[in-house]
Length: 225
Image (tube, rainbow, N blue to C red):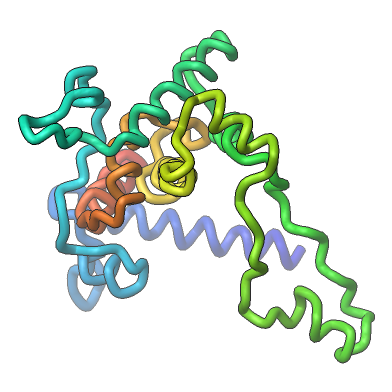
């Protein structure tokens, strides 16, 4: 009964929020004043940059993907070509139109995607101190590459010096599709983020707060219609 009451209050709050949201001004109309989500909010609470290069969610042309300037500098990071190669390879294997994030991450990483079960609360504090109920805050030093991972990189002919950069680009592509700019099919990988993911893996900074805020406004406007 208590859970039902809590759920009712939650949905009542959501309904009230949607009723007071104005799609014309992207503001929440309250008795005191109009409120909204700002770029500063996303920067302060989400850690997203306001300034930086423009985020471009697009599939590059073949010329841009493989081409280079007069100085023989590639238009795009070399890892971008490997990500598209792997995407089309997996899409061909699945014989579908979309590729799930689970299949994408499983192809690149041969490690468990689940956390180990936490210890029971009945254990003494001295024992729990070394386990997950009282973490130290330090991540274990483990190599991200297993023998299967190395075989995967070898099959795609990824040079050794680009392995870690490609690994980071793969992670960032999942992060962008799942958390930053999710689409209707939030569990699928979008090749349109590969270009930006590869630039981010090379430490390029992008103003993600702007497209994220636009995506939030768009989602809220869709909900209230």
